Image (cartoon, rainbow, N blue to C red; front, side, top):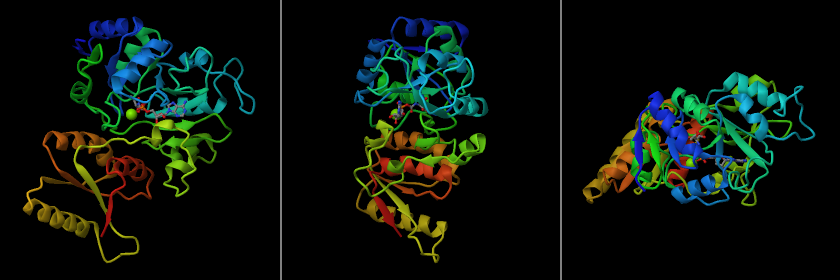
Length: 347
Ligand code: TXA
Ligand code: MG
């Protein structure tokens, strides 16, 4: 298949919308990572998305919309939730949407029969997201259909934050790529389960539990399965969280300060990493050291750095762990730990 590369001009966005309407696949920019779009209501388009990514078909796709009202026919009323008159979107989901969308948050709600099980990985719920990217919102509007969109990478690889990353993974496997801006968020949206009375975060992201709590005036917790709980019987409610993810080709190690070791500082952590890297370099290994000044910078750059180091044929990547006591640090560390295959060195 010949993949075409489109700009964000009106003409090109209309062309891309036509491809989506005809069941084709178009990669699009968002504020978090690039997505691989297809008609969410067309089960064949969903099957093509799974095939292009090499993704297991029990891992549901996020459905992108351009305005809240587009969600109405996609969701279904259930008992136990409060609804405003004339809407099948729960009151709390309305509140979150008004406060945070467009923005890096995905809400899981009970799905209507209109959404095929192929799109939701067999689940009875649908994940909805209204991304903060003007070109992509126009694309969805022109297409006039909800757009299923997982991250536009080959399954297991770091998520793409530039259109060039998408090209590296999916050229020849999809119909088109929109050449938008690099993503500023850098990690995927927060996924929040809104199917029960209280919101539960299924995948951490840049929208924190504190923010959700503040908007809803309700407690907001993490799904225990993402807290690194030792109980192996806990299965994450977001099926994607159980798969191997974000893995660079190089062996990756995370260096962190041992708890209760107040004698050491972040500077010392870096010098230990550098010393160890030097030792491996003397043995002829190509070792790269990653260190970020802030959690936001880590979020923005992590996936792009992992892809760059792969291209530079790094054998080993040493990265400094982030402080997990802040919600953003926790969200980025959720990815870093998976990238490193939970390979942690305590110093
Ligand atoms: O920022 C993002 O969310 C990006 C951009 C493109 O929007 N998309 C993205 O999609 O990261 P994906 O498919 O790579 O990740 C979707 C995550 C997976 O962990 C999946 O299991 C979970 O959301 N998910 C999707 N639908 C769900 C549902 N109905 N119930 C629970 N989890 C769901
Ligand atoms: Mg993904």
